[in-house]
Image (spheres, one colour):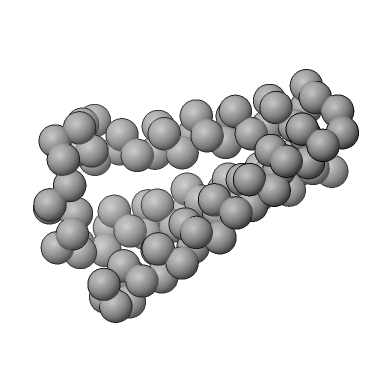
Length: 92
């Protein structure tokens, strides 16, 4: 069940990241050169690696480590949602 939840959180993170990339916010132009690698998709690769790591840790460990990985990814998703909301609504 935790893997399904992590996967759904990951899908949400990808959607938020894509929305921020397409928002045309002026902050995107001020990002370092490596963020613009792969046509601006470098961040999506990082999102994928974070999701994969969280799912692997959750699946291959027991007890508090698995719970910690899931909670850490949940916290990351909440922070991502707040940042995406701030950027998309131009409050930043």
